[in-house]
Length: 181
Image 1 (cartoon, rainbow, N blue to C red):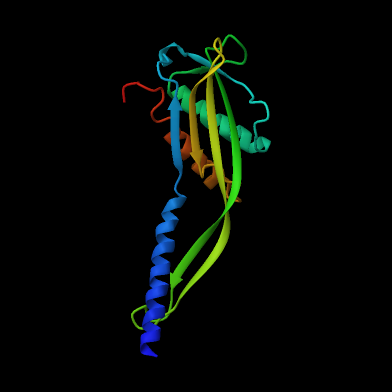
Image 2 (cartoon, rainbow, N blue to C red):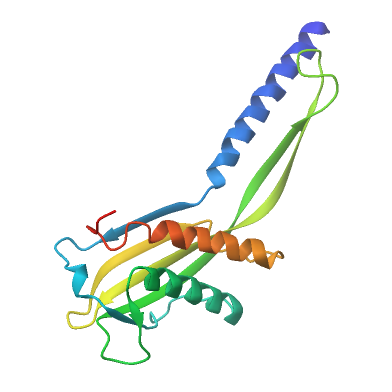
């Protein structure tokens, strides 16, 4: 019986470590890419455009996203204009999927003495924000940023805004490409 308790304790401990380690996978994943050879110093103004068939959230989240991107671009020296001529077109789209999240905790007197742990699952929304920038004369994509686990239709509006801003800040950290850091 004692060996059985020890085996159960080891299995539960290993499971809890796996779950805790997997929890770190829920951090935002941010990447960007750009067209090599693009002279980003020529871009001084931008305007918003729509991607045909692109997915957008409700009006509130749309405004939150646009304001966060506007703020990031203003911080990089770009000015927003309402109409052409603009030297850069900016568009975005989102995707929200659901994933299982496991939460585990130990109980009893500890794993060593045969204590048991509990694991529960919950469903979380995992949102991806994609920002595209186009050169108007050539109609070519010149920069793309993607942040996963950034869009979260949360009940806590402040937390959702904070998460969005964090993703946007990471996305534009190295923008424009080749600029002095």
